[in-house]
Length: 64
Image 1 (cartoon, one colour):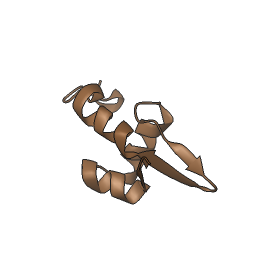
Image 2 (cartoon, rainbow, N blue to C red):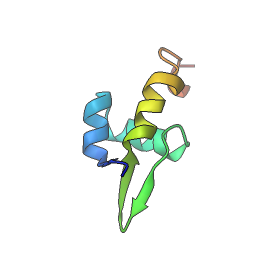
Image 3 (tube, rainbow, N blue to C red):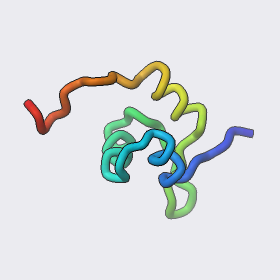
Image 4 (spheres, rainbow, N blue to C red):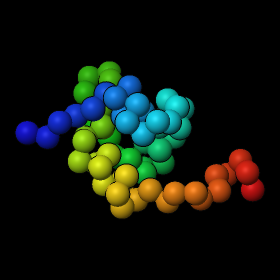
């Protein structure tokens, strides 16, 4: 069975803020599932984001 991470666990692993994690989930960069009223991130999806999808160093929208 696939492990689901909490938002807290995911943000701690990525070392990003809650707001940044929420933005990544909202724009579809990191897939998530809603279980009841809480959001969970599949561990496999987070690994895929880290190793394949992370753009690393791209200028964000606020710096343009």
